[in-house]
Image (cartoon, rainbow, N blue to C red; front, side):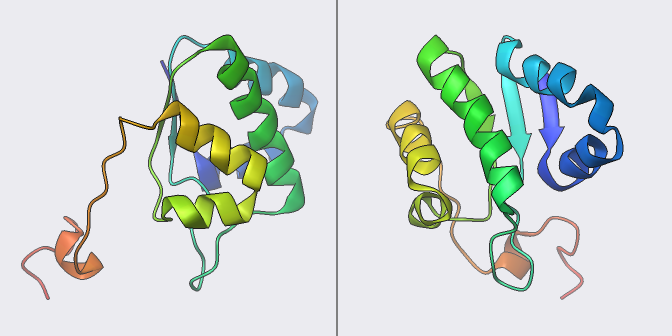
Length: 118
């Protein structure tokens, strides 16, 4: 299993551009990939540059056709993921059709880091 933190992971990819292909191949071919905080919103908007979308699409599309599992956490709804990139989002929806867990509620109450403080 490979754990990829979206924001920190892309910073790492940009900082070590020489190893981009190696790191992308790892994400494509590992038995199970977990992408944490996919397109994590900043100021209410999905954090997704064209380059990040292109890289995520390459990984997700590869895994989609290879029938390799992906675990994803995101603060975005399925509709919002599809709006970021339709091809990428619809592949995720199709891959996860009966395996989607949605947690609803006040984000401050759901955040374990501030539980009991607010």
